[in-house]
Image (cartoon, rainbow, N blue to C red):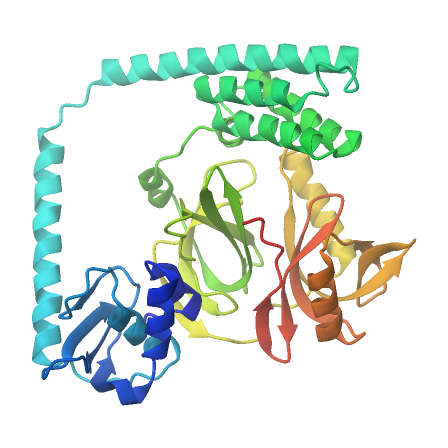
Length: 439
């Protein structure tokens, strides 16, 4: 049975007015002949005319239809129906004729599209020579970009970060643009973070850590043997090579029941990215999933937050597989998170991960935590009393302190080697989002 959450419905809304109207329609008195099956939902919504509007939707939000004259897609009636589905207010029932016709028509259109794509693919002659030329061109551009960046880092270290030239964020932003031109977006993002840290008056330590990570990537790029495929894949990903989705999906997957433990949203260049952290109940492995979209059309989480799903995750290649794709899942309901870790376990796992991939960033975990003050600073303590620094704003600190009530409470967070950030916490059986979104 497919499931959809209220957050996913809100993400589908074309504007705030439609979302508000859709939520207002999520009451039984606005509908008749409502129902759902494993994948679809339907109902009749009373409008201003004599005949009610026929409303149909796929529960993934990927397809919908309404007979109303609204030009907004999806309209408020579709949103209202999906809100009802998210609230569990739709009974299971056989499809009525108008829904069956719509489902069959969609299937026919999808089949024709696949046939067209198959014919187009069969007509394509793979230009192996051209592909090899493009690969060599990209490799050449990346090599030049790496050379320029190595020179910048070396000069900055010799002259010092307090030198007026290298203390200027514009120098690093310009270098980031050059890395984009060199087809190395991963390097560009890291260089841009250095410029952003300098612009907001960040500490020299934070800048030096980023420079150290960049240096490791550049040295690895120059020295890793192509025979070490996993490490080469990690370096290529750090530089910014895009791995085709099909290539990831064709690799071996990991089957488990996954707890969707934490999420946060970050914004860069008017693009929103949802980062969702999951942990396997049997494998105990952690992965994160990414979904992106423009600010005008925010992405929808691939998996329902705070719930358990059965899925086969396909990890991206690398020495430390961390990111994955989830082509499909089955929601198996809400239940307590997996057995929590202590901070000693988190630190040990973080150390092992950094030994494999030193330029990596954060380690996700579930632990029993509560806010404390350690050495005059905000911190989180685990159930054994061990504490780590806590990066948090005042509003989230107050909320988390109120939820914990002075007792260790199950929570999901990440540790980056310096501080902990909380993403979610158990509030009386409800898994709630307490992330500090950058968006």
